[in-house]
Image (cartoon, rainbow, N blue to C red; front, side, top):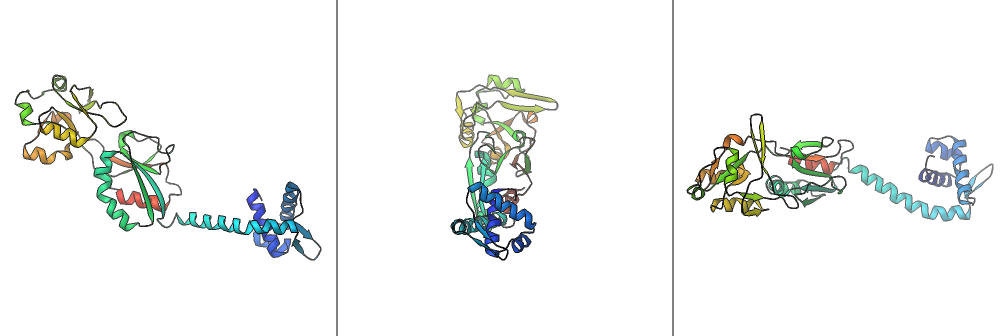
Length: 293
């Protein structure tokens, strides 16, 4: 009898059983404890709810009025609790997922059809946003992000292979510009700069051995769409820093040429992350298993 809902439920049990003894047995509590809880409830609301005799217990008029509201209300609550409990065993309900645009296109999109077919009772609500929002504060169940940006207290599941950057330019660009031999040479080149929506212009990250550099390159183009960056590079507008797998066909065809390859090692790709493994809803588990690499 630790809370009002328990006391109200106990009152309804006594009224149904017409006996404190039988109600106490049904609730697996002591008769004296049950009687005391009901008495405190009556004192709290200032009206007698049960008429007690040595032979029986019956609701008063006030008790009948309370029962008339309690039965449907407690029934609804029990139904809701049963439904919520079902979320642990069957993939149903809503999952809100926060995804950057790049992951939406290359990680999520290829598996969306399969997910919808396999889990028709799960409402997968995906928000595409490049800004790194606080997952819990923003009301999301899970997110997808580069591993380096995921907080240590999150559970992370790999959903893409390692990615490798590539610095590329068109043959037409290199016809009038010497290929850079070192990262510092990039400052003398026209570069196509990229900006995640809502963030500052991206500094090119280069690594070689134990050396790590961030270079704020120069260039007259600042774009926030990867396809535009690649097309601008193909058209000879300047050098671009892109994911290798996005330009593999262009490198093979010779429409783009790679430079400073030894400064572009692989880095961890995308991970799906969420706050806790405890009491994980089956719907979220379905999302994790679908997108897991």
